[in-house]
Image (cartoon, rainbow, N blue to C red):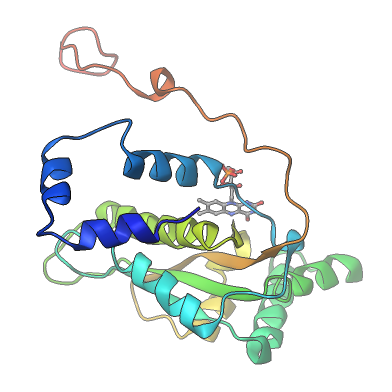
Length: 230
Ligand SMILES: Cc1cc2nc3c(=O)[nH]c(=O)nc-3n(C[C@H](O)[C@H](O)[C@H](O)COP(=O)(O)O)c2cc1C
């Protein structure tokens, strides 16, 4: 998929083409078709299926620039990412193992090893951190999480557009004080999930069936909506 031409066209705000297209939203336009193809073909790829090579330093920079394009009410940048480079993975592995033992002292050696191994799978691993503490302007945590989710989605879509696979992993270790300490989280910050990116060695056959709009869209109709105004 070549998004370059589209980006180039959009960047040239003076071109007649851009001005004409900007005035007329088009479902059949080339840009929409590309966005549709990109977004609908994205699928979560388990880190087990991600191998080298991962994104280069340049590609990572480009991906992070996409994250920076997330909507951000109050321009708080209520999220950040921590890159866990190969040389640091053993520390994350240890935290995953100890977090498991903390919540299940009877965990088997196999379970502990499996927890440890999760830190080593993907070529590129970022820990996504939400910054939810009090700041000015006081944008509520829910709104900040929307921005965090958008930043993550931009990363996932960007990686997918580059031809990489990407997947999210979370689990109870995210809330562990050991992980908080390892990541040096400030008050009000929370580790949300890991963003794993790499080359796909085995792809799932098809993306999952997505819910139809009717499943999540309703029309406001006062007096008939459950829990709404009567
Ligand atoms: C915040 C967050 C955390 C996630 N954590 C995990 C996880 O720990 N393990 C996992 O297999 N998938 C995880 N996922 C990915 C979802 O399982 C995946 O998005 C879902 O199955 C839908 O598949 P799709 O992304 O291919 O449409 C997570 C997704 C989100 C948004």
